[in-house]
Image 1 (tube, rainbow, N blue to C red):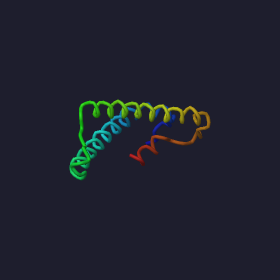
Image 2 (image 1 turned 135 degrees about the vertical axis):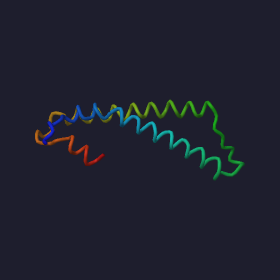
Image 3 (image 1 turned 30 degrees about the vertical axis):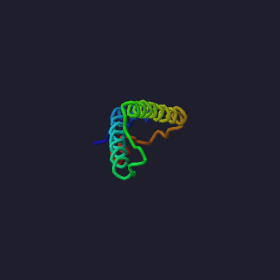
Image 4 (image 1 turned 45 degrees about the horizontal axis):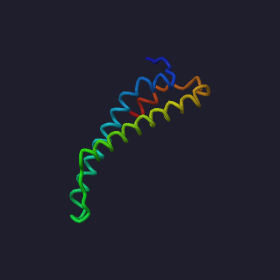
Length: 98
């Protein structure tokens, strides 16, 4: 059964939520690793501490970078959207990659 071909921007629109959730999960895991490494491997005189302010600052910065990643991804489709070959089935590519 052959699926209908899908335009890359439509595929991206359908995958955006999953992509952003994966970025959020990766950010949480990275922050946990940062805290574990900072609190166990640094010497006590390094004054490593995690405060509400530093956590909030890192959260805002990470959300901003997620937004930048989405904009850059969208700009890529805008730049090459008109030159997408007509015979490419992006849903098959997505099945292979995922």
